[in-house]
Length: 195
Image (cartoon, rainbow, N blue to C red; front, side, top):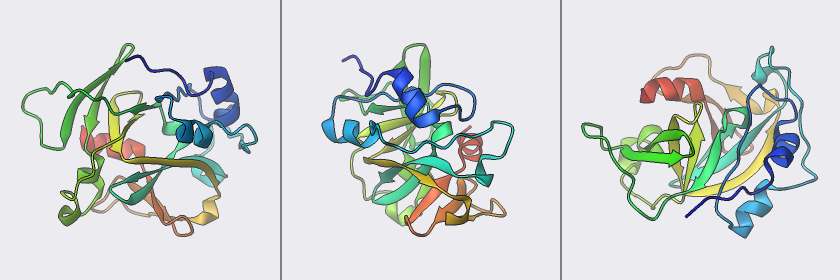
């Protein structure tokens, strides 16, 4: 089954990125009306960012999504794509840990898909498992994070976030947003942890 873009890539770039950090955003997903409605909002306020500055110092946009009931936020400039989880089993490479689900190929990219719940949730909650509905591509299409629900794109101010000072035992956690009740992913640290 071929994937079709939610919105024209040029529209997506102008609506959601508008000269944000360098690189292009390709938001792709199946033709599900509720997701299209969430992501293709023409009246969305877009914050322009200077790529030479730290994105945490000015308002920024995030994709909110859920993994086993846990709400997470992915900085929008780190998003490479969103896809429906395939109906067929993903091909696996031998010798990988149980949280490694297999390879997802899109165009020239082969993303390694991981069970996000296993990475970000305490051990006791990792096995209460809802099947994944989506794959979120990050780290230049190298990794795919599974999730159950795509919620929305929203803009956050640096003051909304309680930023983490040290990585500790959860290096993937950049900070928390109390009014959204969610954790912001530190994509570079998460990619390092997965590697």
